[in-house]
Image (cartoon, rainbow, N blue to C red; front, side):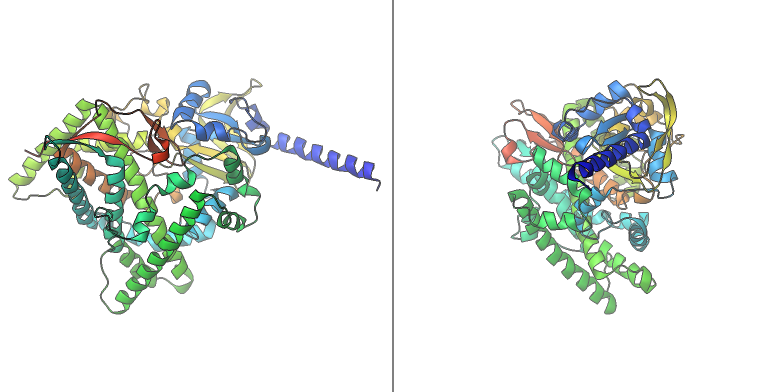
Length: 542
């Protein structure tokens, strides 16, 4: 074949492929969405450089709960905040939707074979092996650890405040302290391991967690975003190969942290296995996991490498997400004085009942009997979903049902959307949690009272807790959500009960950076990483 003929043949095949793809994704192309700002980068830079939840609000306001956006090289994707569509993807599709290849490559580079990274049969097997250690009884058993660490944090703040001129108030970077306290809490309760974070212990792993995610992913360039998205074209294991050779300071820090975490995790797993053999198992989460795993058939058990990967996953997910949610929770309370005062009143009223029955400390059952605490906690989780979105793609062609019809650019009305196999669908947890059709016309407002009138049995339930998308839903819902909720309530009760939080008079402007998740950054001090300084005043518990 002559070169000219070959070139024409290649062009013809390429054109045919583009037309085929266009035909396959016609319904996606017909859905309204923002204009593609760049054929190369798509909307990646627009989405990741914007402050937390601004993109989601703009899409909801202009296009509703379903819109189209672009990935790399003009690829068309679907953005959904529609409850019926999300319910179908997460729960009703019989595991049809999985993470796209690019996402699993990124997660594997950080978590290896942990439950967050694996898909299909591997995920199902891991989930089955881990479930016995993550029940409600097991979660409640960790409360003393959470209470101990929240009290230790309160003591630290009392010490700091006592050294000030007034002896009653201080400006405290609550973000930093909460990160340390929740790391200690997950170490003690999940692994019977002392990170010593609150005491600034000389622990390489503990120190490596400081600003880890911000340093690694905080301010990605367009080129970096392109590379992260381009993982979808890498063969299996290619993402790990690329990550291991990335010479940026942030990625070097990430690899260093991973080595420390791997060393500690492997040691902990060996200790728990030996304790089980010796007949002296502990009650921490890892001991329960090792024990439950030992009772399974050999083909269903987790390997040592898989258990080690779970340890690293739990440490990271168990403290980073909780600390950031608590940080923004205290910030909301500092800005919503009436909410904070009402919550403190309920804490004191409950404590009075506890003392009247002859006890001195709260229990998890006491938390469950505090309606305003539950409402405040859910409202914080609704506004600050740390997993901002979930990327999913169907393994075969599917039809996505919608709560409300969507009018296409062609004028066609869609009550469901045909989704070709492999099409990336972005499930927006932030968008769903702000959807006015679900939460009411004041969905953007922080108003805990809404929870007193919420429909307990929605037509299209989404999440495992409060119908929120914050912990995802279905077979890939957050396995540790019960632990997170109990820990969250414990810290709220301890801290709001003993301290008043307000915004400093000369407080600096805070922006909510999406890095992934959400972190508080002081405008003009981005180089210092996440910060949230609040005015903390001792109030005590009457």
